[in-house]
Length: 167
Image: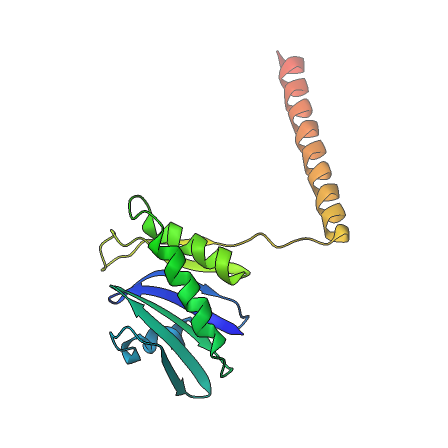
């Protein structure tokens, strides 16, 4: 199982996601420098976590897993193929993030950094899939919403009634 995946150009993370409840973001960011700029499959074991990486042109596709699973390279190759088919105009990072979402069936997209933004103060956008509420939670939300709307209507009525009677 893939725990965390990033697509990097140089030291700039263009797209990132996590398929785990744990935070592997800092681990993968620290280990980016361990990836060589060669066009071959790289697997590095450190602290009981495997890092899989493939470089393609100026991009590095890197993911973490606790399992020794060679099929992860197939998934990374699929990502490379999908990335090679997108246009580089517009928001390239958002397009890369969509590819991660489509091909790795993740739960949430963690961070996108726009590559055109100054590296000293990168702009970050968080895209999180809304959690699916259970039926009981939906009903509770609807009750609270109805109560709030009724309270608002009552408040407006009282204010208008007060204005009319004082006029």
